[in-house]
Image 1: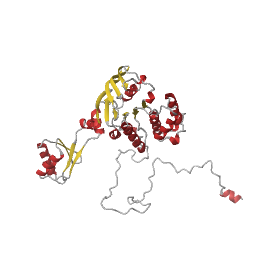
Image 2: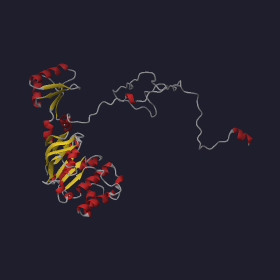
Image 3: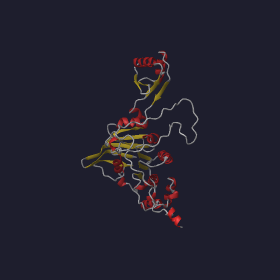
Image 4: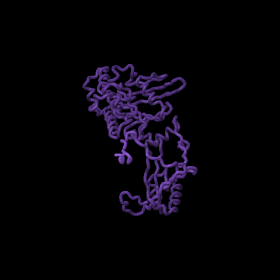
Amino acid sequence: MIEAVGLTKRYGAKTAVYNLSFQVRPGVVTGFLGPNGSGKSTTMRMILGLDRPTSGHVTIGGHPFRQLPNAPRQVGALLDAKAVHGGRSARSHLLSLAQLAGIPAQRVDEVLGVVGLQDVAKRRSKGFSLGMGQRLGIAAALLGDPQVLLFDEPVNGLDPEGILWVRNLMKKLAAEGRTVFVSSHLMSEMALTADHLIVIGRGQLLADMSVTDFISANSADFARVRTPQTEPAQREKLTTTLTEAGGQVMSEPDGALRVTGLPLPRISDLAHDAGVRLWELSPHQASLEEAYMRLTQGAVDYRSTDDRLAHLQAPLQPGQPGYGMPPQQPTAPEVSQQGWYAPPPPGQNPYAGTPQAPAQSPYAGAPQPPAQSPYATPQPSDTTKDAR
């Protein structure tokens, strides 16, 4: 188990982590979430003894990392997949780590097979792709068969098959009773992988609860209701009925109604009693991403703004279409979408008009002869032929 108590880390005037306390229990996958710059990487470095806390402490199994006997056999970690000597092969890299920790060489071949790198074990790691580097980092974390594992963005660069493999691996390790602590920015993947969440923002704890409780606490479930679009009076009547029954009704851009405060059976009964026909009545539960964005919206340090590219576009040159005229948005040709029409014969455009000759630019000069290639073989002229 990992336990942090009053963990604080300052770099000069900058406070990266402040009074952070939490527990990472064995047997479950614990997700570690937070915006960029929130202190996740700093916290993981303090757990592994790479950074010394300004105050507070963090222990693994009741002991600081630096006091653990033969730590690689008890704790495995992937913080930076690029922390590999590029001139070494994958097997040589793992073999050097195994020798330092007293791990048999046989284990190196085992973990290479686990992560799927057995066929490239003798290749130098500097030629590895990002996904292959991630697999090598995971292999290093698994090398000592530890009971505590920490992963920082383990699926970064992996293809869909690799992401699924990592997800199943995390669940398998947790099912074996190990402590699994995973940091990630992929909310959709965390929703499928994690059982418990620890969320921080600007170095402080925001949430420490299960995924289900986190979504319920930071979102509001609602019912989506739709009435016939050709009968707006029905929509207004239903809105009034639901509001009088204690529900909160909001209109959505597509004409549907978002109803909160009333269960679906109650909405159905009220619509039936009011004589309103329903075309849709469906429940909506917020996703982990929606709940996360709602919780951390006030703890984001780096926000994007509208990117206006108009001033970056190259100015039109004389002779180009639109020169001297205000820019216009391109319009698509109006094509009927009703029915089905056979495709035109190859090479014919059914929407093209009469071919027009290309416009002559007023700035174009006299036609120039084609450039002579310096590698072309000179051809004899007619004069030469006559002379012969």
